[in-house]
Length: 467
Ligand code: B12
Image 1 (cartoon, rainbow, N blue to C red):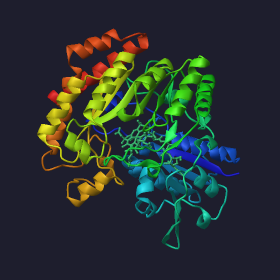
Image 2: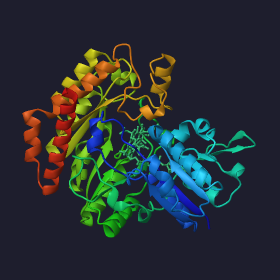
Image 3: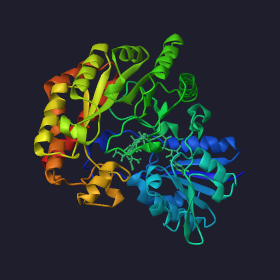
């Protein structure tokens, strides 16, 4: 039996530049929770430390880590903006427990394993899915025989081959929720109907090939069965009183057969759960929207990105603006709210195309919008494109949180991007029509509280900007 501590590193919120930070969600790293479940199955003792949910900063960590003793492994997850915090945690841990083996996994380490592994405190990097690789490592298999593992030996980096991805997601046990601080998690303002809520996945991988998006799990799509997803919802309801789930799949409606079965079970068994999901406009139709509405779906989030057809082509979005208009209209007819997200600063962006996107968002009139400033994440086609042209202003990963402009295009510089980012939100949300619609849609105290909090956050944001 080995003792393993899994850490979601601190996410210190930087300057208050990004309005979404004030109304953002707080979720666990389900990736770590899946790994925890697999390790527990093997008989190991596992601890889960969510520095983000506990609001710990890197400075708090020495004290916090002293609560753990006799650890054999520490596993840390990290996205690109969190990698420096993850490495700082690794340093503190290595100083406190010099025998502990430190493993880093997650998207950043999967894209840039070498960069992470050269850090002195890091012993192993796990590329892509971690369940089986971490299980073999902790259970004592020779590192040289473990697929998906990179490590240091005699000052050299040993690069084992990639591990084939898990084919049947039903084979993975449910996340080890019992190790998580479940009362610390919540969804973003405006995205839920009921609490408590938890995030969930029905698939892995995305069929899209957008140039700005990091293709997790090598873009290979896999599914869970409807029954397997329902069983997890039942665990969440029974053990934690969960009333709502937020599906964070890249394309929740990718496998229509599974979604239809899933909805059938919810309806037949009268399972009382409300939910939201992310998908692409080309993966829904009127029939499916009707079914998911009946099964409790109240909000769909999808990416439109730009209203300029040429930019949509440049980013390989593979959707048309007509499809977008049709889906928003259908969803409204059926009674599902929509949130459309847009980006400013993709390949080919100019002041004209930004204005076009803002006008389109107003005309489209979904229930909610989100405008983002494009960030070129390493591992994406966009990153390569921008790097080759010298458009990337910062290679400090701390800046890659989407609140900073790290890429400037010849016709869309930082000033313009920031200006239109603020203007777009203001123009969308400060319309009497949208304020009235939101007020009329309030059905509970909870929703009223959300609306007030969200409204105040927006107001505060623009007040700060105008000073
Ligand atoms: C849910 C989600 C969130 C949630 C919760 C994040 C969290 N606490 O983990 C919220 C909304 C808070 C969020 C915020 C952000 N997100 Co986000 N998010 C996702 C999303 C949709 C799913 C992540 C997930 O849970 N996947 C399912 C689990 C099972 O997979 P996993 O986490 O990758 O874990 C597996 C492996 O990676 C590996 N693994 C992971 N960690 C470890 C650690 C060890 C030790 C080992 C051995 C293995 C291992 O094993 C796991 C099991 O197989 C992904 C897209 C995607 N499809 O992955 C984007 C994604 C991770 N997010 C992204 C971004 C950019 C952000 C933000 C910067 C955006 C912003 N400013 O708001 C922030 C950063 C915040 C943060 N904490 O890092 C990018 C990251 C790109 C990059 N290179 O960093 C992604 C990949 C989207 C994309 N395609 O561009 N996000």
